[in-house]
Image 1 (tube, rainbow, N blue to C red):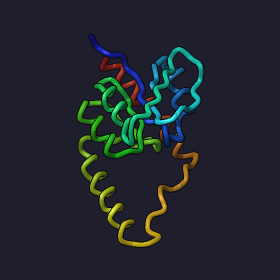
Image 2: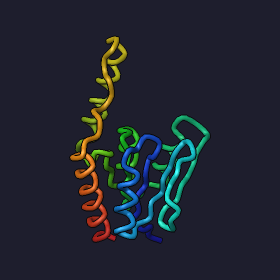
Image 3: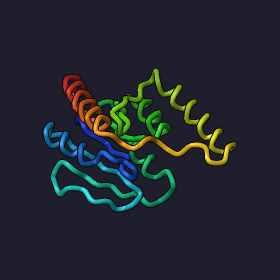
Image 4: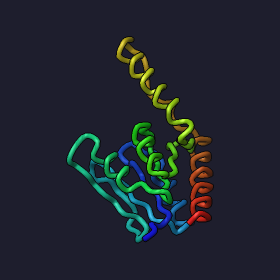
Length: 154
């Protein structure tokens, strides 16, 4: 049996949950929100919340297990993105930038380089830049376009 087009959210640190719900409602697309701790989600038939508590990577493991070719996975976690891409899911980061099979290797290498720099230099890093209005617009557009593309494939 074929699975429906759906949105899977690595939700613990996702700043775009409200935007995801708005797009999902417009497209009548189910959303599964996966987190390591209970989080608030709208009470709506399209929204399912899964709380996993049995380990450091439990939420990532659950999202990766659910990923499939008609799923859009929203995550900032590069290693989770790689796992989902191996299952042919579409993957977006919260800034609306897609992870692809062609780009994931470079993203993993950059992640490793930054980890090495942080480990070797006191005060290095600082995390990602704060979200801007343009990031939200880019995310909304990318999610909308991805859902349209997947629905055509379904």
